[in-house]
Image 1 (cartoon, rainbow, N blue to C red):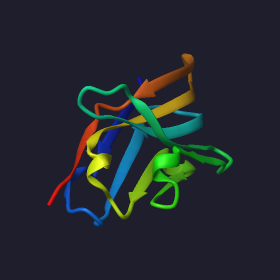
Image 2: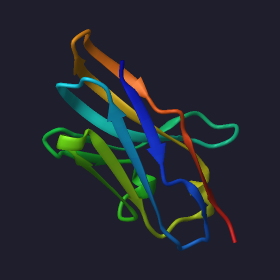
Image 3: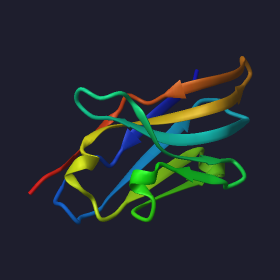
Image 4: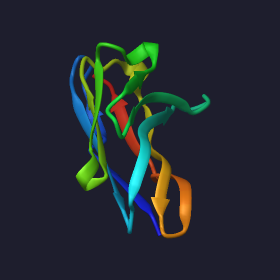
Length: 120
């Protein structure tokens, strides 16, 4: 069974930084894509960034130049470095893993979410 465990959320001031981490546990042979989504109160969940196992990245326009996604394939871990944070970045951030290859086949998984609050 695959579990995604997130860490690193919390409170930051506008202009500040936070770093999120997400580790996938279980007997995993490969993860095609890992990424971060966020959901603010009253809004739909949206993609923030994702990265393939080859290192190709994609960012939402709202975070380009401020956030950086990276991953450690050997540790099945993905990171999100968030700089120049804005109040509009306040949301619950969810880790996502797509195309996770296990003995049970391929599957997609979500973390439990971590709160990021940007406020002075």
